[in-house]
Image 1 (tube, helix red, strand yellow):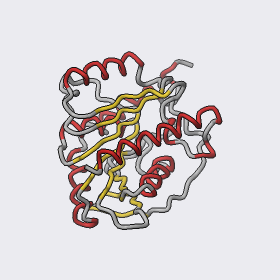
Image 2: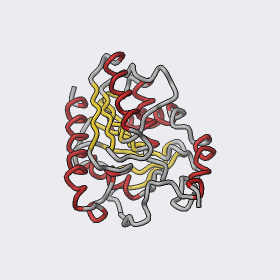
Image 3: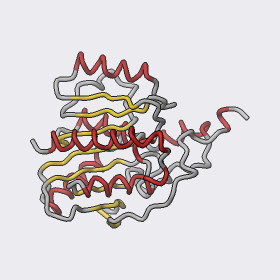
Length: 247
């Protein structure tokens, strides 16, 4: 068996199910999952899912965490009805699959949900968080969408553009030290180029021994040795959002 016959190496085979506390809605025929805090707020977040799509239970778990921390949180189907990646799909097919789900072609969908959050929730401070594929989308959007006051990209970066460092608003990049999709050399290059070109606050942090997808794990799916890093990443994410979404 060659590497091309293997499934994508982000293993969700042993992940437990999760029933979220939010609800599903449709906005201009786009499906989304939304979760509200228990009190009124003008702060909202768009959560960009990874390759497993808007219904993935790990993503909904994080959406509920963000809502619990005081943000109206909505996770749209950025694939617009196209089928998400499945654990049984093969790595050799990933490049072709990705061609039809480009994380840099998300501006129109994002604009729809920015408008929705403003109109339906009177949101004046809107940020964005994304995982993997969604992390790439966040990186792109923080270069192109000034309405997003703050962003957190978890294990996702844009690699194929020389114009990817002049961020418009504060952005936090989170990586795992053992991520098979993003090398530490790529992380170092990102940090060097941001230092050279970026004129807004940014942060790049690597969490030791953590693999791709680590920060989405539900408690019952965490390995004991990973718990401190997962909890640290989530606290760091919330600290970043709280700092820059309050401005």
